[in-house]
Length: 507
Image 1 (cartoon, rainbow, N blue to C red):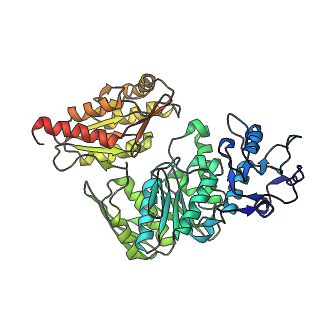
Image 2 (image 1 turned 120 degrees about the vertical axis):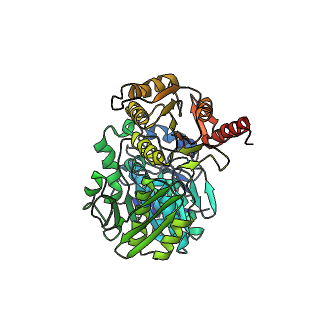
Image 3 (image 1 turned 90 degrees about the vertical axis):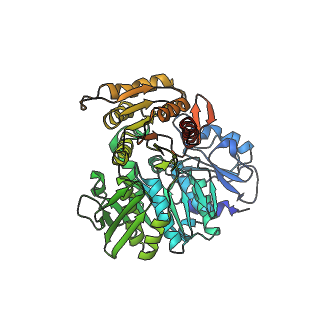
């Protein structure tokens, strides 16, 4: 078990200490030895330092006594210690920053022992991360991943609790990666994680900005605050670390002078890295990428224009980190796909194409529909919903997009959580109903039960149609009220396709 003297660990907090740690007041002669860093009093184990975070609903300092009762040997908080607390108590200006620094120090600053790439943006983080990891692996560098789909540590893939976990988990996972022989790690860095300082204390070798579109405004309030959170990743970059920026997004250009060594990519503007003509098909993409180090030939099974941007981001990062061109090409070709990202549920025996995708914002849904439209020989049928207890403003906007770009829209539940799913569907329908930009609006069905909605869409599809099931992608659950129920869009679509084949006599 990893341990560290409390006195040695305190050096990680230089610069954010308000009041030096008080000594033990229980007569203990020796300073404590720390066995871990905790931020949830309920999960404290003996020997750990408890960092009391101030949350939206509660102040962690109120649970310090509970942490001490469970064996905490020191407390770090933004408030002074109560008079009856006898263990060391340190007052800091920012408990979240302290948590990040303590976690990095306790785990031996693992980011300094590998190349860590942070990817931020609204869309494209997951696919870009998997592309870049595949390139590292092709170059002979073992690469870990922390992201939405899962945490890959060595040969093991673990279920992701969050896109970017809390600082102690981030640092513990990075340390495990180092011990597994990883020379690189790719982190999807969410805006929540940046706002809450979960990756502070991490030494990034490069940072990528994919794009910024409407999302998470329930947390950030407005787009400027949302972008401000993303910007923090680049403010953390060392001066010589590459900053990879998408210039086709208006926010990309504003990051040019923020931090790091700027490398730009774009499809529609002059940039350091740009694509040649792109061949699109349901079988994948084929194009060349012009870079300062020469041409990279791209042949990939990934589909659609958004993946051109993801590939440009990965190629830009790999070339900026001096990975060999042949490894870049082999890595791109080797990635067959990413779970829940334009993932085919249908096969060669099916007369319709069914795709599962994670698109859960209006911009991501538009990209998905625009990707699928030229691939459809018939109609485009879209099944989607919106999550409950999340940004409500995007619901009618997603309805507008689906109504404009689909021939048939089936609105259903996503993860309704504590909200009434029927109410969420009504808010989405307002966007479809009030779309005045089509001469003929899309047909609309509202089916609350997601399984029934997917089944109906597959049943109504005609030969040559494309059915898009959007919003949940790789997720294998549905949150209804306080219950987390097993649910897999890919599996449910497969069942519906099997019934379709049986009915037609094809199976």
